Image 1 (cartoon, rainbow, N blue to C red):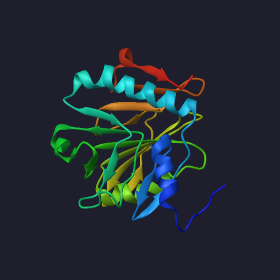
Image 2 (image 1 turned 90 degrees about the horizontal axis):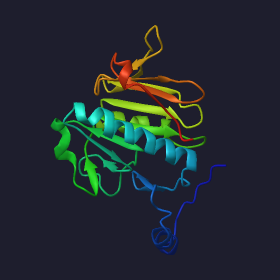
Image 3 (image 1 turned 90 degrees about the vertical axis):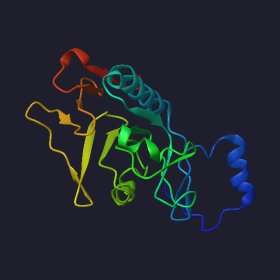
Length: 199
């Protein structure tokens, strides 16, 4: 069920801050979006993917991985921002990190798509920001989609003949694994392959 509250009281905003319910809130051009907390599977899958990136991929790159960071356009904070599940920064973009928020485009944003969420609606925002790559991974099937920015619009990547999607920004490959898991590896290196889920 979707709902719209034209005006939200300061009391509700303060209550959400006190209880931590605002952790995933986003501001879309001055309009507050209040998604529900992700379920346990979503959170555990997010943790598994971040762990792989930090333990297997980061040692091969001078890069950074962060979760649940406010991402805003230049001069957009705090009235226009989104909160992806994970972001990847390569060295040329480290300067966008202002601790409380990122001002500008990370190299990759990762959205774990739960039923009814706004992952796909965020694509226009990420394209306007200039994010080179967006990964959208289905929470329940762990099937990945990879979008690359071409002429200010996203083009959905086509898998290779053996089903892998290649991330040009990271050198990682993704595909749906066995039994609703995400298979991920360093490009062409099956020794680094893991199959991730929230179970």
